[in-house]
Image 1 (cartoon, rainbow, N blue to C red):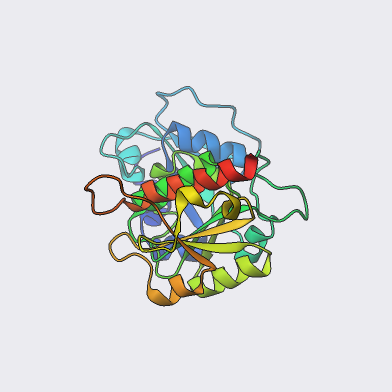
Image 2 (image 1 turned 90 degrees about the vertical axis):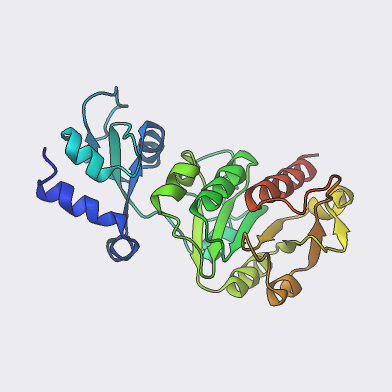
Length: 269
């Protein structure tokens, strides 16, 4: 199949966010992402240049062999890995996520039916796709029940977000919310406390063991500006990560990893 093939040309249009949103389709690039997307059951077509050994392609999924030019057109990577999957959107409503009803696949992070979520990350106004994907990966590794991208946030299906998630986008529920305050309210209505990661917080992360043991929605802010005051004020507590050295601050994904793992430890102890 050549780059001029109509299916390749239509798939290539998904590099634009507006087209992705309209069609509710996106591209997952590379063997790891494609394997996890296939396991999650969200793939419609797999494009391959024939160089890689692929997992079994389920019935109903189209397998198309393409030439080098077509693969370069489909891949966001400088050096294409040789396989790209056309996938359906998999985000769920915020209410379903915080109530524990939104898991796209069965995994250890999936709560029992009706149990409700115990650990969620709400990312407000996160603009960097690499950070967003890494937070999703950290949340997956910590056993969290989902991630909410809220406000004027980066597209969850941006190719760089998908790649940075290292397959975790397909492991746990993802929700999108235009209003971070609505996501906070939904978490609280589901019985979760809301903790804002804030460098000026009144509670230290390492002294918050009892607090962290309860069902928690962590609230993280923008990479450059942190949390707006109205969002920080809407949290039940502001929690600071101690800085023992001379660094001014931690980046978003590092802060999220520390907070989520500390909660995971407290909830499992």
